[in-house]
Image 1 (cartoon, rainbow, N blue to C red):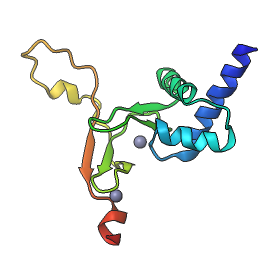
Image 2: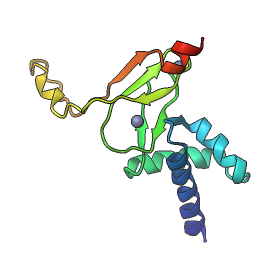
Image 3: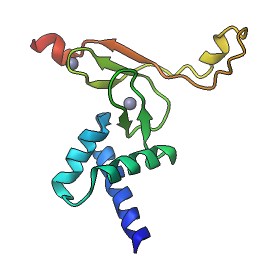
Image 4: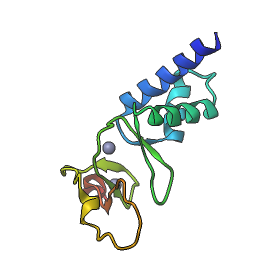
Length: 129
Ligand SMILES: [Zn+2]
Ligand SMILES: [Zn+2]
């Protein structure tokens, strides 16, 4: 019974991330879910978001400043963050698979992956303010 309920909750969280498609924070995802599933707890949503990203069903984007975001696109890609409204967008740029290989191997650090988050002003903020 418990397993059954956990599966349902996981599915609800996954479906919400897939329908929002906007790099939402855990809080925004919770706010969306609670509209239709009022009994679900915030901790449950958070737990399932982390579980789903560990399973590779969604992608967690760790933001240097601010809350982590969750992406329905699981392949490697880059993002841009609007400095005015905080919106996170996908960048239309090919992922540089071997970027780590360009680093001079002289400090013993083992590079395994990279994320790039560009900063700027989104079109909405650029033209509507
Ligand atoms: Zn903006
Ligand atoms: Zn993305």
